[in-house]
Each structure stands twice: as structure tokens, then as C-alpha cells.
Image (cartoon, rainbow, N blue to C red; front, side, top):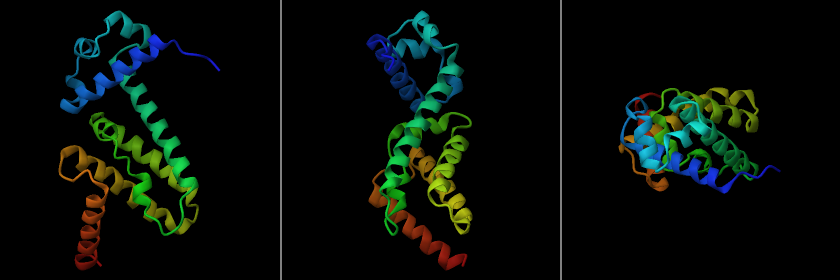
Length: 173
């Protein structure tokens, strides 16, 4: 096992935290490298020691977050029992997933990741459309959480979804 220097880990964490804070306030295009390193309290040279540019850095953050989500969800699904709420398992309520939606292309990468994991676990062909709809709804919920148009409490989210389900059955089915 390769050990990483503690200073490197602290620098990477400072940059990631600063990036998420800035991204919660503005779009990726409006974040400058100077602003990021100042917010993280690291030098530009230090940033360039680890990353080629801001785009490469943001892509690494996206890749890392999706890998963490993938690992966490696979672990949770090992103990999933039919009849339990799948929403509790798959909806990442950590704010970073909501914030990362500001990065162009993140939503499609997130939905692809979630879809692949669910297809690994629910292999029945009958579930394909249901999985696709479910995945899109989870991404939509994250977007609503990010915009502040949905409460961040899981019980309130479930209640809102129940109301949505009633709406669908009343007007569409």
C-alpha cells in the first residue's frame, strides 16, 4: 500500500472544500484559479504540482465523488431487502452531490453511475424502464434540493414524492 504524504492530503482536502464552497455560490465558469487557491489558502504553484488546470481539477473531483457514491451504494445494496425504501439507499443527501450538479455534465455522469449500479443489482429485464425513470427522478430530486425547492429532510422528501405519486395516478393513469 502506497502512503500519501499528509501534507498532500491536507492540500487536496483544502482545495476540494474550497472548490465546493465556491461552486455552491457560483458556476464553474465563474470560479478563477486565483479565487480557488486563495480560498483554500494554498499557492498557485502548489495547485499546479497536483493538477494541470482547473478543468482537470474539477474532473478529478467529479470522478472521486462518483467513485465514493458508487462504493457506498454498492455496499448499501448488499443489505437491501425487497420491500424497503430504495430512496433511502440511493439518494445522496450530502450537499456535495447537489453542489456538483453545477458542473456541466455531472448530472449525466451521476445518472449513468446510478443506473449501472441498479442494473447490477436488479437484473430483471422488466425493471429497465422503472430503473431509468427512477434514476432520472433521483437526479431531479438532487436538482430540486440544490435549488432549495425541496426540503432536505428524507421524510419530507418521501411525503413530497407520495403527493407526486398521487398526482400521477389522478391525472396520468
